[in-house]
Image (tube, rainbow, N blue to C red; front, side, top):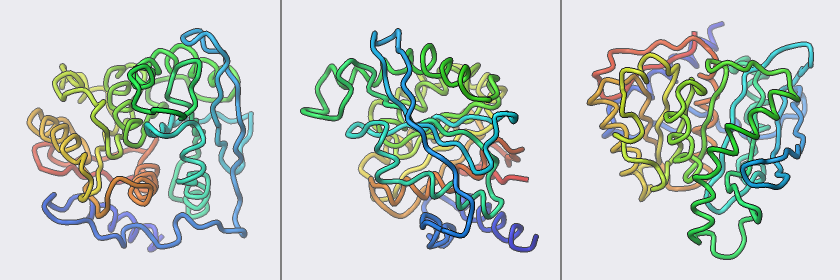
Length: 295
């Protein structure tokens, strides 16, 4: 119990410091992403679903937590990759299954299913050739339809998941961070938990993201914005944070040492995952950074 209270204290303290300061890296333990053989492990499957949006069958990965049972119901996190990746990028570079397994072993996260899709919704969806080609960039925007109308219904038909807004989350890195903010905040009736890690320039302008801040206050359980202090894309996260602060929309704006890389994104996932699908307390929304700690 003392250990859990100390963890919650450090998480709370370091997230709520003023943004001009750097976040102490000790908030994330050094072995948080290291495989532990003496604990229970989740399982990763490859699924194939038909996309009416694209007109072809598409692949995604699904992580089920330790102790997964079809007799239970689970919330779902849709975890999105960057412009140069596909459904395997997080698995190859971020190893979310290890991070989550370790969190579960420590009793720090709620059991959830995590879906890792290919966010490039086009027939040739591999990250080959010119990844900045106009058609490929447009395919990332097109993924909103694929996600809402094809992938989510498939997951809900084949896995024992809750189907309501309060049990559904979306988060991602870079291009996937922009997608998560665009899709999550653009569909507040579908997502209650939204996270943008080092969100890229595909992120809509703040006024486009949240034309109705009052609705966001009502619908969102947690809005997480984070970025490395050496990341050239910090301005995207900063402008979103400034708008949210101006309109007093509760959120976490988390600045951390680092650039545009998986060291930062793994830290983000470790911290973000601990807050998902739990009661969240928020401090005065007029403050620069908002408090959020799992009870």
